[in-house]
Image 1 (cartoon, one colour):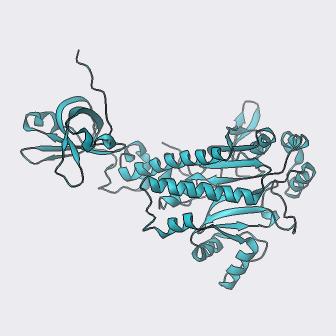
Image 2: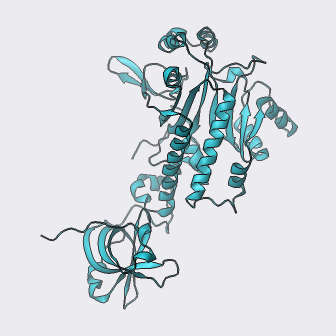
Image 3: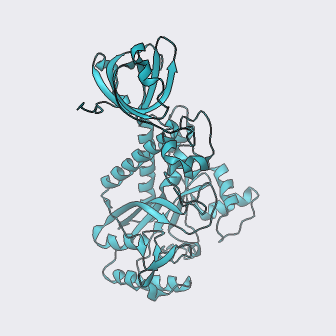
Length: 430
């Protein structure tokens, strides 16, 4: 029985220093060009394309293979005459072929454009487009940088439940379902758990999916989204802003080092890493909006229109701090100098909110009062509140919308582009 070929090299490993060596490569057939005396076969793997030279005696073996079929083959590395490739593979042996069935639902090369809905319906095939797969290479590396950055600052990665017995933030936008004999919800945040965990673990972070039953059909909203949540004991919201600024700058630098961002031509990313993120108080934003003709009322939330105006005035990263306390969840700490305000912040990129965070209220009596003020029953939070009687230290934290960050850094116009299988009010498959 003939021994099956096994891949020995990826495309990125085919370099001039291995010219003359025999290698086995694998991938899918992206193109077949028959120019008479020779056939150029282009196969691609996740790391890039490989040009394969096929001599006439092997024409019959490759000419009729459908494009996008998966294949493994063997040959010798030689210098290429093509400008875009330094080396190529001279075909010697074809291993297994796994045929694609045509017509395909989309063209994964991107030469023929398809709507995003058609692409998402064939997502696994869509990912063969190098411009699409690149987004998820970036996302993967960004997650690695996030984890490394937080670990360097003594944060411990944790995993909290996604099936919960009560609304974690008292919100109405929860997915409710029957859990045996009880009602349960999909978590929209790890907030209560991560606050409890800092009692002993000091600094924690979690990267996980969360769920929001919000009927928002926009290019920046999903019903299932990924969040990077952090919480730290003996920290305040100024500390958290510093931590998150450092984290985002590290992500930008890391993606640049992969070759996906160019500091020389991209003024936005250059400014992001070379200058400190702006910090604007809520009050200053209100004043600035009024000066630019916006009809805003002090104490009200900032509308999408107002945020777009602020984004025009401040196109990069900037913090909005000291929001009115009434606009924030019950666990946010009131400002020491003005109890109408809170020790909180949002990080904006132009009009788009990326992070919301702040110092936390750690006095259980005040938390009960805040719950009552917001029309919530303190008894429903008894399991959470009891922890605050066990020596809860002052603490602070935030949540970063990972999908929105990747969307922004890659220049994607729709958040669904950077999520493998997005979920929104109209999409629950594939």
